[in-house]
Image (cartoon, rainbow, N blue to C red; front, side, top):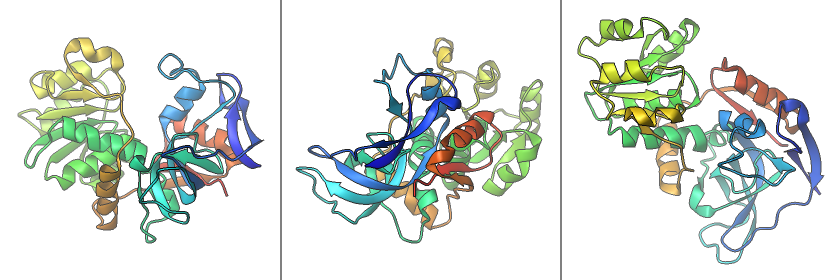
Length: 304
């Protein structure tokens, strides 16, 4: 038997339990990973609380987690290119807050031995989303990008990816996170009332594009600053589609994007700060910390 974090009913983290389960068996086209690290994302506590039950119906009891890094432990029929013992990272097909998880090789990439497990296990979700939205917004060299919640998981990745493309980034965040944003290459501004004036103070002609990773009602200000909704994209305010902005719901990153993200980590253009790591039995604390919204860096479950 192996161990996994599960919940039997939707609700708070008090319902999480670490339970013994049989290790999953890889089917055709799947591999099984001995999980070394599993990144925590806001999506995970939203699933637990039932926010996603219509989009992602679950058979309870169920587990949590999709970001993963680990060692290939078993290989299903038809899998080529991966072998038992390979160290990989990406997204899992079964919950990753567990000692073992199944994964599709098309959503995995090799982990360089110089990159810590916790970092590798944090890249796929937030990093893949940031990569996708920067592409959708067509951010290019010399442009100015405004990112709301720039110090958060997706926001901090997006800042760095845009800077690597040669863009100027303005990021909204609380004052205590302004130092972090400067370190990442962004110009920080405080969010809230008066935002338009504060952004125009550092970008008098407005901005070329906006990424909303906040959902605190910034869409009207974003449209005004960008001169229209066409290059405003949100990953959280799904009810804003009627305003003409782009809405991105996210998809797991594929192998090529994972390779690109890891290359940026290795060459120092992408920094993945780890705020704290937790054992399986501390998954509730990790999710509570994520929901608090006051975390700098990634939270990671280390099953061993």
